[in-house]
Image 1 (spheres, one colour):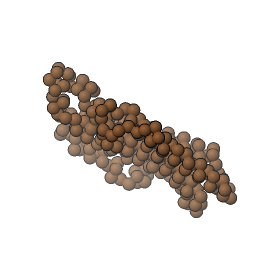
Image 2 (tube, rainbow, N blue to C red):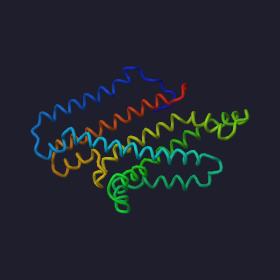
Image 3 (cartoon, helix red, strand yellow):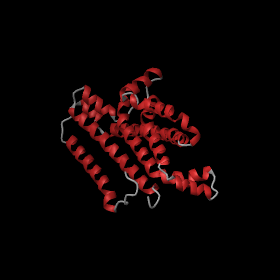
Image 4 (tube, one colour):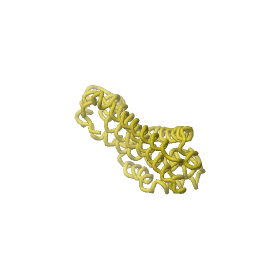
Length: 246
């Protein structure tokens, strides 16, 4: 998502929802045309899918909200002149979550903590915090120093310069990082089924372990559709929050 791009037309806004609805409709029609065994009927029914989708969304949004609460304030702090000495080690700490393979990260949290929802949320936070942190820092660092100096020359305090000049100008880059974190969390949340955290990954894993190709396709398509839908909604939020002229 590049700063300064033109906002989409109405047709541009409706294309993705129509495509996702068509994919879900085609999947529903294909599954209904199949002869399902007992395992497939338990996993590929509407009640189970709705429950798993709610769990998947809860994992995604809870973890992303915590990421925002941690990464944005830390990202702002690390761009301040007085924090230059601690910036490299602080960024290195955030890099740890990305350096470890996602399944390894989930396993570590399950071993040292417990099974269930919150250990999976912690793993997602560790995995998705870096994109938001980096984009926050890059967004603030790219603000023209002359603009900041002019604002200070007009008598604005450092807090006012940050909130009224730097943050608004950094919003497009910051939103791109938040959008990346959301998509990462949707995909990685599929691993929650390995530690009893719920989500759509359960359909996919049962399909693989039980040799049910139908469940593999259903699980994969549902996760992909959810990821595209959340990315689309994040794009709408980006269009709304992007300052005019950027």
